Length: 340
Image (cartoon, rainbow, N blue to C red; front, side, top):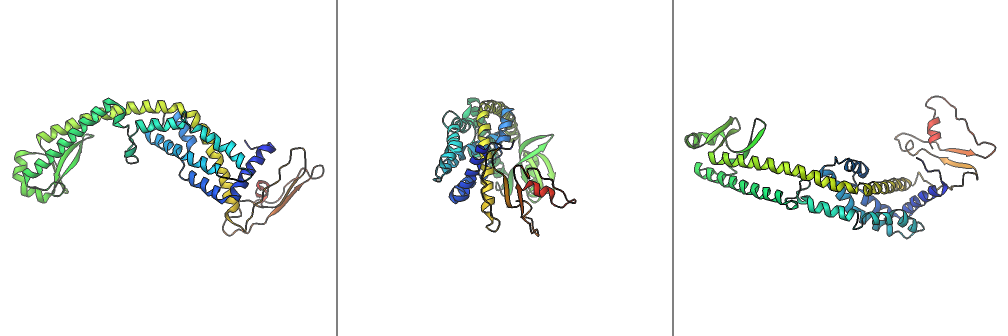
């Protein structure tokens, strides 16, 4: 809802004024907020426990930025310094202390494989002994498959990764490891290929084949991969459940970030073009003074290309012109005037 209390409105204007006057503060806030995800949306997903590991990584990145944002706010030395600290810097520091988002970061550092991000979002094998055991078995089978591929290349007199390649073969919605050679190479090794190997597929781009040992290893690999993915899924649900306990903190942080983002936007607008100056209004109590606006403009209309905006005055004096009726033809600017 719009602010209606003069004191709250004045505080907001003081913060915008501070950012307008302090270019360093404005740039530091903008730099900290650059790339900030939609924290409120992510917090709602987390609350419903529908967040993915990618969502948790976005929140992790947002959390890591908060100390920099807090420091930027504390560095301001103008009249609004105390207000910036009490309203934003101190609450951000409280939310990022060891009992809140610092603990959230530690949870993700312990549970996620952050080195694989952004290519993959996985639970770290070190997080669970069962997962580590399956990972070790997967690595051993993958090493065995690589060794069998090298042996097949030597047997056929080909060079691995050049004239013969270790690839994936997809059939019946399953993927399995296989070897592929070009049609040219297939003609050269056809006799050995038919005698010692099993052809899986022949196409224009080459022939895919396997051996009994490679097929057995590939089947073990597929079985381990299925078990690994199933356990990953269970652990993801567990990690998301623990992370969801921080939802309340994230909702509060989202509100603070949103306010700062909007107020920094006001400051950016006020300093963007010296030919379109802005001023800080004087806010009076509800039962005092008149509404006097001189040379008001609509910030969106005036920046449109080819528009020469005509500024307007609005004077509403208590007791004489407290109520105005705006009339005019369609597209005559009535709504634009009211919204200024």
